[in-house]
Figure (cartoon, helix red, strand yellow):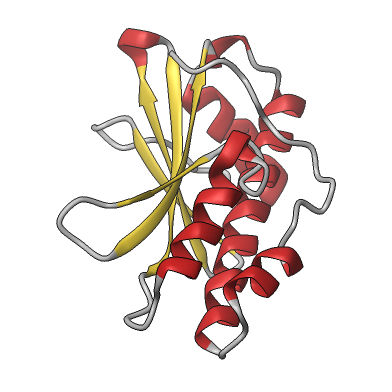
Length: 156
């Protein structure tokens, strides 16, 4: 399934019939006040899904970074996505690369997208809890995987 084909079908489901990629094979979706980016890589038959989590809290310390690394370990707190720091900024980003994207069914794509949005929200809640003074270990425990289906495919 091509990205535009997915977007057209997805757009019909959510009531946005003209949903398409731009000239850079990119589309940004607003989901529950979060922006989720879809970027096609036709050369490698892959799809990159990414979104901003939050800026790093200025008061973050070792416990904060330890909690993030533990959530990123074997994708236990990210449902298959990777957490990283955007170069030249203080922005934490979540991303997932889907190889062989064109072979995904609509049902599978919707599950992957839902899982990604849930992970993004979970990580945002972790940051918010941390900023509110909740201990990083406690905040991380409160954001453990809710059991939503994860995508843990092979990265290329």
